[in-house]
Structures are given as structure tokens and as C-alpha cells.
Length: 169
Image (cartoon, rainbow, N blue to C red; front, side, top):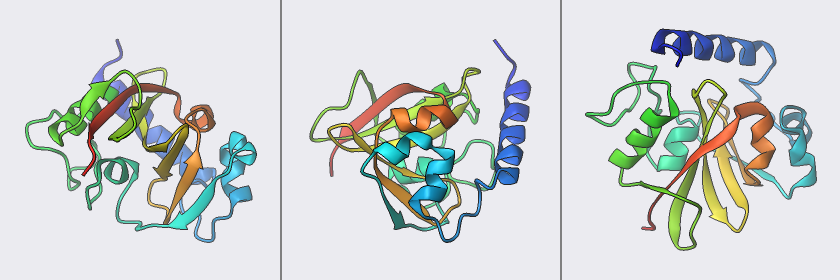
């Protein structure tokens, strides 16, 4: 199993590469721009809506109002949960917020899917809407994608590592 230092360095390099690919900072995003990064979105009924750049995908999925990331010292992270880039640490963070690990999405429950790459680095969180449709906040960009499938993000974020659920408010 790779060390935490190795995983953090991979994450740092991935963030740097994303900046060079133009992934960070789409200001006037349109579906063609987004689909150039997530090609499967061209075949899905996706909508783009504005959102606060003050939160990321994890905060959006968890319903918290501030940036949520383990490797950023001034961001929100639940007390008592180890800060790690591994998806298991993010699952623990969501559990500290009232979520429980689940086998699959269930109607009437708030559900989150955590993605991880082949090294186990947590790469994204998506919030379930209904049926096979999901919603995602993409980093510091000022918008949210609504109506995508989980598969449409696998080319970028890896596989879904787990589902988490809590009772809907």
C-alpha cells in the first residue's frame, strides 16, 4: 500500500496538471467546455447552474457551507477524523456528519458517492438526485453540474469507492 506522503504528492501533482489543462477556472462554462473534460456528458441531460466558488464537491455533497478538504489546513474537516487523502478518511468525515456507508442509493435518503483513483486517493464526491442522476460541484469553479450519471465522471475521477447515506432533512 502506498504511503500517505506518496499519495499526497500524487494529489498535489494532479491538482497542478488540472490547472494546466484548463480544468480550474472555467468562468463562462458551457456544456461543450465541460464535455471536453467529461466526454460522456454529451450523451446526458446535464444542466449547469451557478454555485459558490467558496465550496468544493465534498462540501456541496455534505451540505456544509465551507471548503472541505483533508490536505488544506484551513478548510473544514470534522473533529476527530484523521486528515488523509484516502477515500476511507473522506468516508469517515462524512460519517461524522451523520452519513452511513450504504450498498446503493435508496429513495428518500440523502446519498453521496465518493470516487477514488487506482491509488485510493479520494478524487470527487457527487450528490444523488433521483434515479440514475447525480449532481456535482467541480472544485473552485462557480458552477454545479446537475443530471449526470456516475459513469460520466469515471474517465476523470476513477471508480466510485463507496456510497454514503443519511436521512433526508
